[in-house]
Image (cartoon, rainbow, N blue to C red; front, side):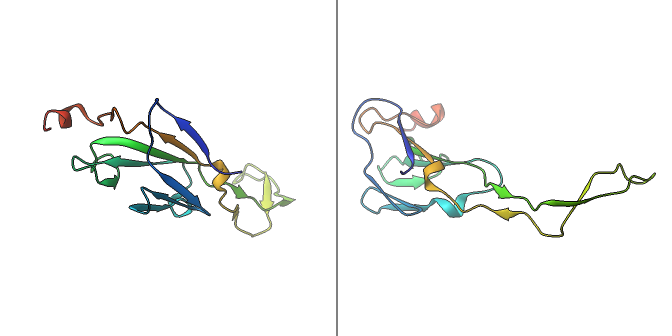
Length: 133
């Protein structure tokens, strides 16, 4: 299985190829190593076109959306709780962990979703940019 694809509208889409954790757009014009963008919160990676039809990463640098990668937050495996903590006036009781830190689960490209926009009727990112054309 690989990442999920959502077509935002009808028409031809940007060429892309997913290889491992990397996505290559437009025959290698831009490459994104998706696993390196994963954080402890969901991340959106905008792939856009500028006024000269060059691909750029980020909506601030682009004029039109062509793709967006939705990277889910990192998942962790937490160590087992080993001993109950005695409740006293300074603690509320609870459980004590075995001293290990949570372990990050391996990145899975299957959990990534990519949205694609048509290249025919390019959707303008910001209204004020449309006046500059």
